[in-house]
Image 1: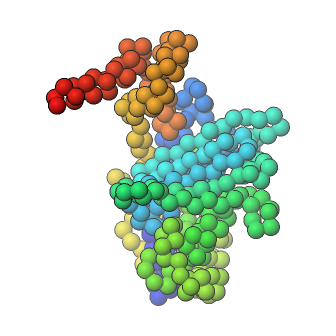
Image 2: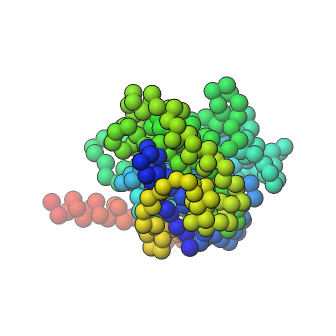
Image 3: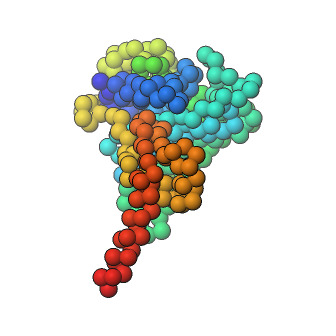
Length: 333
């Protein structure tokens, strides 16, 4: 079963989160593989999306944000966009859109650049969309390129996100990520802010935090230990064994793990009503053209694979209903 663990290093300004997505991750892959329009992910895409799913879950759990955290990677390779959405209760969904290109294949071992950053146009975006918004409030979004300050492509998702966290929070962060066809897992180690609680929107950015970047010896020591965690260990070992092997000389306070119904889990909030509103947004003319060509309108959810079918009568009713409601409202006055 999927699980998430939080912990603190006693007496040190360092915190950690470790996540293992098992049934949650395999459910995402199962739904993708069962979709006849898309089929399953190639191995390198699966690993990238799995690492993204683990990372987004770690970040959401770390900031306690009341709303959705959306992690996206998009660019100019065969993978046009990969998206992970994690809600505040750790329900999540993930998908990737793949369009094969001549000369850019997705064989085993394909790098991040080969998948989404073929010409250094790839980007990573993190969006925080509050559940409750003030009038006029827009979601916060930060974007970083998939290359370093010298323009050299970055091939590890963990390094891209570490760079993002350093920019947004001015807090040192170490990420170790891994995924295969059974597990998506990640370890996050972060230096605590000097005051208050940091978040991805950077509200706790301060001169004190900035002055500590790279200089805290306690964090640096623990970061080195965390970075020694191998991919195979993260994918196969249980949480107790991982923490004991890495930090056996450290005193750690562990919080109650999130398992079962509290654990990260796959949930898709798509619905027939939402798809209907999307069709209305197309307008009656375009909807009629689709029906004339295909006989109906069929929309598949990219996240969960559900297919929503609207025959000519269903589609016509979508456009009639708002008119009838408006007319009855006018008559009542």
